[in-house]
Length: 228
Length: 397
Image 1: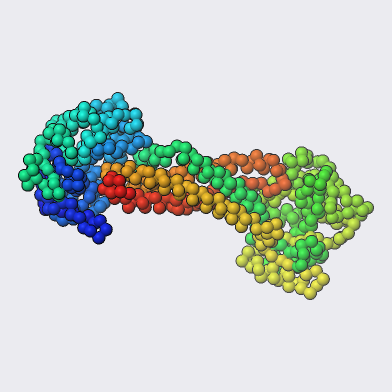
Image 2: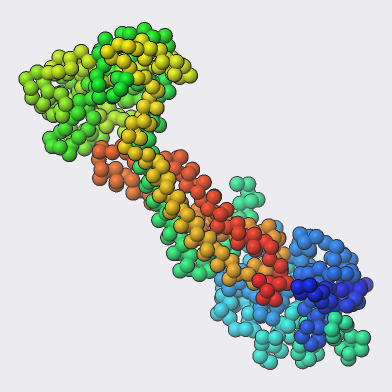
């Protein structure tokens, strides 16, 4: 059984009086433990699809089932709670809180749980150690390199042990060597910790590390070789 | 606060604090301006309260009877018995303005010529030792003085008190009088303490020794049995002297005190206008600062929502930032104002009623903090609430 089942999903935006359909009836299954790379040109709808899978946005039509739950039918409040419990997010520009230390940044998702302060710190510490930054816990984002910031973002994404990791161009702002380190880290999370990862990338090298590659073009999915 | 809510607020405190001091200089300048506004609020309110202390310490069961057309006109002492006979009247005392100076022109304070027993029974809130009360009653040249006056001039009980009158000459035509200080007046309540900044002299001796105005007094103080009948009893007292050469005007003590204070000017209204201008400026400035701070953090707020912070939590965080900023600066401002007042009181001595920050002023300060929080915090908080994650992350604000 797939962890994520997408059936006939459409997404339409309004630009003034114009309606723009970004996704045209997308069907997609993502099994548990998959590492899927979504590729495609700019404006093809990759990020839109990623946002729908991560519960950051809702589809105009069709259905999205994650772990047996129809997330397209959830209210805004339910979707917020669902994201907190099931999804970890990694973005191109890290999106860390600049005023908080690495440890406090990683601790953020745990503030929404009933864990004690000590337990939150312990878990945040473990997540930082897992991404190789155990010794940088007290550093602020501006005191870290780009690669280190992205590692902190990954630690924040995994600290609450989510079912699904959503990565939007996670290496887009990094040099080749650092990007390789981040990709290796994601691969390790997928292989050793059985995290299901959906990653949007422009970079064919980055996509190579995934188990599966799909191409999204003008709102329609094709396989990695471009076959619809 | 319930322990769960306390735990929740402590949990978000680092996030709140970090957001508040994201731009340290800006936050500190805003804090300082709010702080100064509340110092001003604390001090000005203390002055207003001091001015209104006469009215605040007024007893609802006390009436003041003066001459109908002017308080400076004297009334015959024979009115006392007639007032006592009015139904509802329990007790009557009288007092007369002496117009005193001590040593030089600048040392002016109220001196009242009173009948000791009647007057002190009329004001049970004044604290005076039993032996001193008795000494005042027995000593025709006796005087009692408020503790703050005693401290200010270094007087000692038992000493002679040389006082000049601007109004009343003695039988020999001289304006200098001498009394024996036999006791001190004190009070527990700060508002009442202001009323003890007075010297009371024995009316019997004063009336006998003065050149003019014998057999007359300045005003009557009337204690009644039921405050709800104050108007009716006042009317009845005045009715008894209607069409006589000495018509009276009787009113509740509080009304008299308010009217007397307003002769100086409506200080309360003036202070309110000044503070309104100050807080309006603070409102604009703090509101702008907070709005700017939220604008700068749109992507961060979007991330919080992405991580699972609900619309309500994000709204609460922005509002809490405004509350912490205003409560911190406001609380410190009020504390500093309260801390400055003892020094100010010492400096001005007993020329003015004692200044103090009352519980009412603290409550007023808290209410201003809440109102300002809502006024400056709600617009950015609602903006944060309406924020769409996808748009914010894509840079469309």
